[in-house]
Amino acid sequence: MEQRKKKTMYTFYDQFKDVSSSYLDLVIEDPFKDIKEKYGHGCKKCLNKKCILGEGKIDPVYCFIGHKVNKYEMENGIFSTISNLKIHNLISYMGKDAYYTNVFGCLCNNPECLDRLTEEMKIVNPEIIICLGAEVFNSITQDSKEMKDLRLKSHTIELDKFYSVYVTHSLRELSYKRDEIYPLLKEELDFINETRI
Image (cartoon, rainbow, N blue to C red; front, side, top):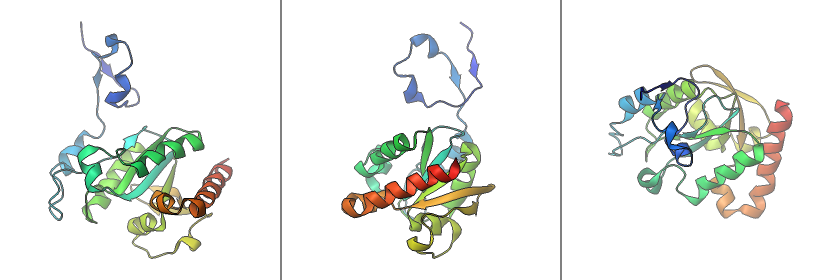
């Protein structure tokens, strides 16, 4: 049977696990191939053997960006920790397909990761970026703004192009201060949805 090339939106391999085997002969073009080859050597600064990219949909409405991966995520994947599993709940709450990644795809704050993030966003092409925490926003913009000056406001950052950006409390904060942070995070997500409409 002649192989066919799937030229539509990129679909991750694990999404084929429940479909008919007749689809498994499709040749899936990986839009992240060049990034993986470029940054696949890992980080020389923290001696990490690989750089973790994000996961999700191409051309999404929302792209959630966290700060950096930890050692467990390096070994088991970006959605392997309890904190990052909460991303699924955020995406579900926003009611849209989304993408999730980190500013730093290694164990340290390697400036090279900002170049990787720029290239990653060029491929993902989200409509709106949601920074999970002031630390994320400041890492991208090289600024030092406080959360009180960022939340419930629309911002603009430049990566491969200018993006509309919102800043919410981080999932790390939600993990250990749930009763305090959950209402704030819900308020921030509702604000983003209402502002976009």
